[in-house]
Image 1: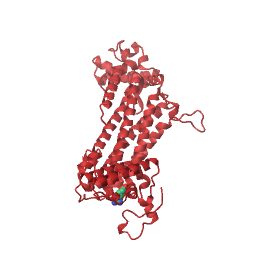
Image 2: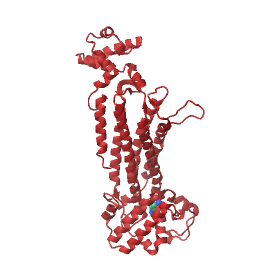
Image 3: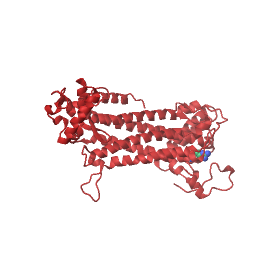
Image 4: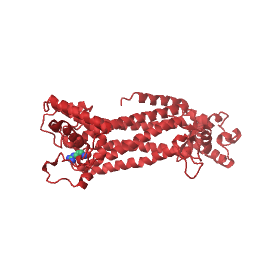
Length: 466
Ligand code: ARG
């Protein structure tokens, strides 16, 4: 970043140049040059609209558009000289345009302000970021659905209070994660829809005296429509807050999933084995293989939640309309998008390679009298009221604890001592397979329901338009 100090574009009313420290302090080009391509897109659309309206001549518009094209090439090639003294991405590009094409370049800013320009740039940038997030999300969801199908019959303990509660299938568990992400998709889509309105034409705050066509500018940039109110347009950052809020919920989900993977992968549980490439070793303990990827994802949720609070606080005291405070919106947005994309990508790559230890999971599913509810349900089917059945099974569990035997390992005589209605067919429901197969309704854990739910989940993804 260069420290050269050419005259500021807004320098007309100022008698002395900006203090070097203040200049660096107030500049944003160090980070907002990340939106250079959106800034150029916005300028091309603005110039095109101005020419359509007869505010610029066709020749002037052509000069501007080809100057901007050259700038875009310079930026791509890394030869563009970004100057701190030119404050931000907008004035760096506009000044370079004037250097390149002279006085015509000075006409680009007609009927526009950096206030509506920056609001447009961020919306364009964030819209593209959302599209990328949505695509990573779909990849991760697809890998969860594939895994669910692969492990539709794999039995594991389902937990409440982190106590083994009832047997479930691993596929069912994967589809639970997928549901969280499906809601996340809905939130992103909703946020994108509200974001997709064009602030151009709002100018500094009140609109412009030129006969602009806002519908045209909006259409040229792929927005659904222009924003409604010029004051709101230049000051609103709700769309950024909505994005970070949706991102925070995704990170909260990924953090919960990470926590489960870490538990499952622990030496104590041994339910899964994370492939080596998603783990690292310890510099002191040679035996260690640490689940770094899920741990880091869990950790990164913190910074994204932090950005949400940061942005809410940024906006809470601001009077209408634009204030320089708003310049602080970009870094949290970039950081949120970068980390979110990284986490989704890492998860999407890791999940298909998960090794599942079926034996350990099945053993754990059998422990803790996880089919006790099945025995109660069995008695209910034999005509015993549920509360009585619950009591009977409680006694059987107490005996099991005493003799260190699971319900399925008790003899028929033992079981019949608790209730005479119990017969040999009881063993069908006391096995973990019997238990999961019995939960055979939409949303249940039975393998055939998991397969059907996986298909529905896949169909929903293939019907998406964004
Ligand atoms: N760099 C500024 C920002 O990010 C651009 C808008 C500046 N507008 C102004 N009136 N100073 O918000």
